[in-house]
Image 1: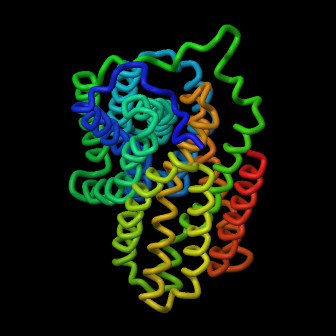
Image 2: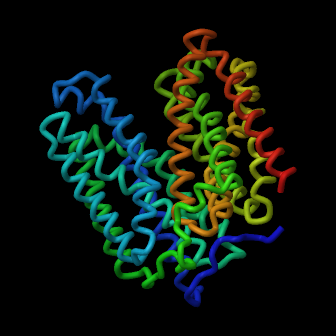
Image 3: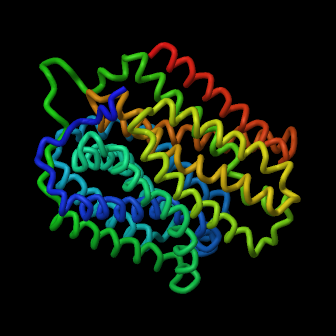
Length: 395
């Protein structure tokens, strides 16, 4: 198997600057993903300030996720030919403006609009940033480059939301959005100054449209595999805090630190996954799905054993975070004719899986109790293993 099928760079890489450029994209990813998830920690404060219920305020989270899922592929296809430097700078300016609007929101509907607008462009960024990282690094190092950009996701999940929540305690929830707006402007300026004038997606033969990949069974199978993988991941992860508190007896004040440790150790998985996916995308998928299932399945019976629980969470966290770049690169390779659209399809698949995982996990808790989540999530991961094995056989 070839090491990578990501599109080679159409420009001669300047290795002395490539690391800086990928770092800028990773920081941009951190700011963008923090913009997406920060609101989870701000819901009680903004609900009180806007005089609405927490349940209603939480609907802006749902709005963001489903906007990403529904509109991402279409907008990415439409913007595929836009120069990457200009596209990234523009997206960061849009995020800056949206965060300003959120900071100024006087009611729920203004806040909803402030969340809807950036949700349209988040998947466009991810699709094009992943492709561009591969262009900058070259085919043989594309997986590592995408993994480095994906460190922005891990960093935002581990540090962005907790730090944002702490900032909200100091400067208020509106102040948190003002800070994010300033960061978006700063990173947008760095993008403009440091990024090369990158080409857009390579020109295709006459009549070959980006959406043609949506009619390829092999590509659709890869997207389905991502949906199943993320559903397995978030069936258990969505309720990990409750699992730690209710089943492991972790004090409420310490649960946040356990979650931060879970994400921090997972950043190792990001690096491992990036190294492995270039060699065998489906092989890496199989390995990390098996490790994920083992970690999720073991966490509940080992909840009362601190050492055993830590070992289970380490395995779970490494596989959980590794699957982000593995899924992204795998789907991009499968949709090599339209990588930006392919990458965005994976982001949509991830959001679909996040939503389904939360639903399945909630149903599991309702009907079978919290302790059932490990079994349910592992069963879904096993389905992913079967799909990957069937794809390997056909390949």
